[in-house]
Amino acid sequence: MASALTEKLSRLVKELRGQARITESNVQDMLREVRMALLEADVALPVVRDFIARVKDKALGQEVVGSLTPGQALVGIIHRELAATMGAGVADLNLAVQPPAVILMAGLQGAGKTTTTAKLAKWLIERRKKKVLTVSTDVYRPAAIEQLKTVTRQAGAEWFASTPQQSPLDIARAALDHARRHYFDVLLVDTAGRLAIDEAMMREIQALHAELKPAETLFVVDAMQGQDAVNTARAFKEALPLTGIVLTKLDGDSRGGAALSVRAITGAPIKFAGVSEKIDGLELFDAERHAGRVLGMGDIVALVEQVTAGVDLQQAQKLAAKVKSGGFDLEDFLEQIRQMKKMGGLSSLLDKLPTQLAAKAGEADLSRAEKDIRRKEGIICAMTPEERRHPEIIKASRKRRIAAGAGVQVQEVNRLLKEFEQMQAMMKKMKGGGLMKMMKRLGGMKGLGGLPGLPGR
Ligand SMILES: Nc1nc2c(ncn2[C@@H]2O[C@H](COP(=O)(O)OP(=O)(O)OP(=O)(O)O)[C@@H](O)[C@H]2O)c(=O)[nH]1
Image (tube, rainbow, N blue to C red):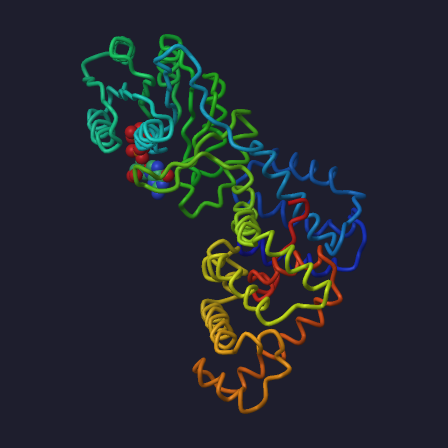
């Protein structure tokens, strides 16, 4: 869905160029595409309807600022609204209770409960410095108890033994008692999963909830489940006061449309995301970043952050002052090139781009671009300081020597000098703010064919 949506949106974004306002008619096609894409991603129909209505409400009549097209502005609104629907910011665990804080894990069989229990144990040990005990109340599948034992060991947590002969409530009471007496901070309770929701299972987990009075009741759901996730979420929500959701298998094929439905239906925040089968494959869920993924926009948020962080603000200000006084020279040009390297190189930026755009940029183009940066650096380094300050003094014979020194053809030196001249002329026309913008673009965006603008970031 992602690539198709990105493709369609970029086409529609282009068509809307030059229009000053978001109107019902100019965004109709885009909203239709978004609606289709969300449905294809298995977001439940009422959730989609509600979502589109809210986006429309927010967008209509909005002035389009700066160089954005209504299409780009709308992509920004959709992105923000998606993030808001999935829960703004990052929702952490609530462990501020008299220890041991109990975390009850609920979900269907195969959703990833056991794996997530161990991942969470590791996360709590490493990130929150907690002493963690795990226990399984799955008396129906002895293998499940053994599985928890194994993964708990991998996590470096302690495991409380249980047997299929005990009742789930007895196991829970014994584990809680053990956790209290041995000063554990957190008790993670893995429960039995069934292939489908059944009443007995729900009654059992309700009884466990009443007995354990957990600080957190986490609903573990497989992001690949799509439409089924909605029904499961609804049933669990009716049975239990859920405090959070863990969305597993986000590393799979799913574009994570389930996140939208599950959050909307349960009203509980998505707290964690499972991103690999490995024991450390658990992350705090970041709605902003996930919104970009659902829209197929890659990790633009991270990309923009990376580009901005790489730009040295003081350097930029110094440069702006130089440009104003007309003293921008090849030393500064070299500095620009070094700034670009600081940003981690173009290929590291590529990882964060939407698949569609990244494919367009192509590996070959990028390695060519990186080589070009290195060549330019080589050429400037082969010049004398005087030549860097006053490139107009470089004569043909010096060009040949510089080229030989840098190991390039003389045409390359000419090309660089020409580019420098153009840049110098452009910078003379610019004020400080424009310069910052240009530096960001120099960070690779321009060469990659331009990104869909994200207003308000
Ligand atoms: N790729 C990937 N696989 C995951 C993730 N979380 C869990 N899995 C895999 O999903 C499968 C099922 O996970 P379990 O933890 O056994 O599921 P469960 O919900 O405990 O199932 P029962 O114990 O049978 O109730 C396992 O093969 C896990 O390795 C994830 O975030 N990413």
